[in-house]
Image (cartoon, rainbow, N blue to C red; front, side, top):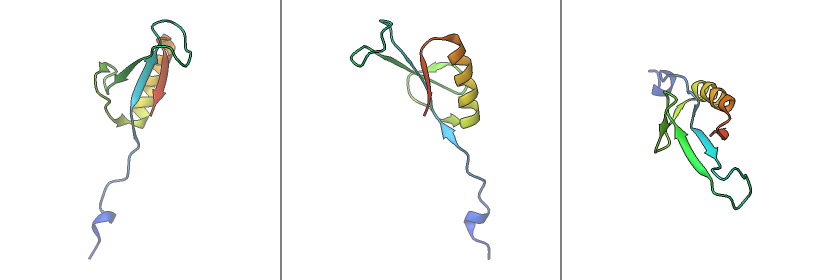
Length: 74
């Protein structure tokens, strides 16, 4: 009899996409920071959402090119 873990699908890396922007323009330790989470469709969200790592990196490259802040894939 086969065990259940042999029939399960392969593990997929999932990540979160976050953009940190600094409204004052200063990236110092005590500066105000605005954190924005992005979803699967590339739209800003209020809560962090998980997405496939490949999609997160693809969207991160697009957002980084816009120069709106520091883009992180967590």
